[in-house]
Length: 75
Length: 160
Image (cartoon, rainbow over all chains, first blue to last red; front, top):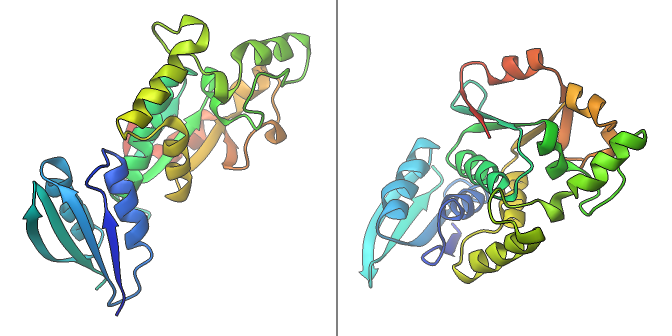
């Protein structure tokens, strides 16, 4: 299992979604993607969008300073 | 992007810089959240997908070539307001970089990477004397209204 990491905490719409989508496309079955993102629209919608596209959101956890780590799995 | 799922089709009529940003923001954002996205470039919007990105006498015939030159190409798209002889789009791009917001070039690249579909209007190309080779390879087909409506059927349609 590979774990990829992506920091979109400084990005804005639509690049938050774009970067996440491009990274999710690289996930082989069983791989994970850890995304650092901010509260508000990214936190509300990046996990939702991942689920809608068939990925599994394993966890959403605050890491401080208004940043959250979302762990997404392929499968 | 699965066929039969969510779909967004945008008629890209304008050749304005800020409207092009709106087009590619919506296109890349929608593609990123799983939409099939169709961009239909017509009239001034064709300037965005010309192979020659700078000012050039693109087109067939004197009048068409003059239009091509005056339109200016993708690197000279004017701002719809306060263009100031082309200075404002450059200032705006600098501001976007400074604020960590994607620039027009980055949004176009993102749209390409997310396999947004690019189409060009056959009728507008005829008027402007353009042929397939005058456009970027991303344009996958030259269409008429009927085919565009068929592609857009069942999804959301925007005119920008």
